[in-house]
Image (cartoon, rainbow, N blue to C red; front, side, top):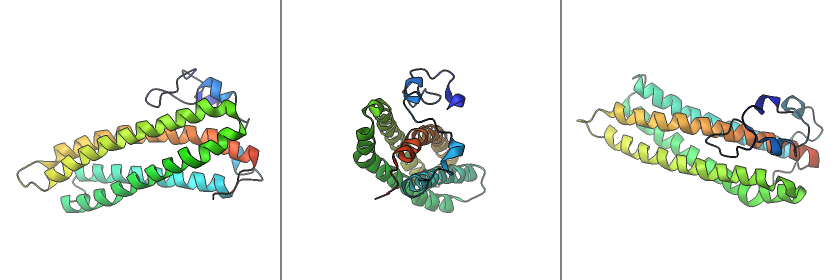
Amino acid sequence: MFSRYRLNCMSDFDLKTRLGLPEELIALLPEMQREEWAAHKDFGGLPVFWLSIHTGLRDLSRSVLTDTEAMLDRSIGVEEYHRRLRRFGNMLLKHLQSHHEIEDNVFFPRLIQLDQRLKPGLDMLEADHVELDRQLSEFWARTSHALRALSEPSVEPRLAVNQVRSVLLRFDKLLERHLVDEEDVVIPLLLKHGLVDPE
């Protein structure tokens, strides 16, 4: 199980540096490959809901990044980029914060009740949320600067937008690491214990 994650991640719980799930956490999880999830009798409900939320977060993050690169390539104009950045950037921020709040306050406590040994892993995922929130704060600081630059005719906006792109590339990489690791922790647990109710 999780053999693709085993290199160089023995005890690394830090989102910024880990390459996958720590070995000691892998040892506590049910033996269940991703390819087996969809065939499980309890696959549906909460597991599918969880994965669909993650798909939406990935799509939003990459949409903002794609729009930023399109602006840099001059495929879209300043006004269109301004509009899309405000719309999809806000959606990403709100959806991610809402999802993390529900996980931290509702679902993770339920999972810890099922197996107290998993608390370090769920604490790791909560620490990921803190780091992702920090990254989003930096993104919004860069975005605010870029949007101000876009409204100044005398300023070359592409420099500020390129800074937004750099932050987004880092954020998207960390978001993907977190989502993959969280899925590999949470989905097998939901399936093992039959937790299928998304409410």
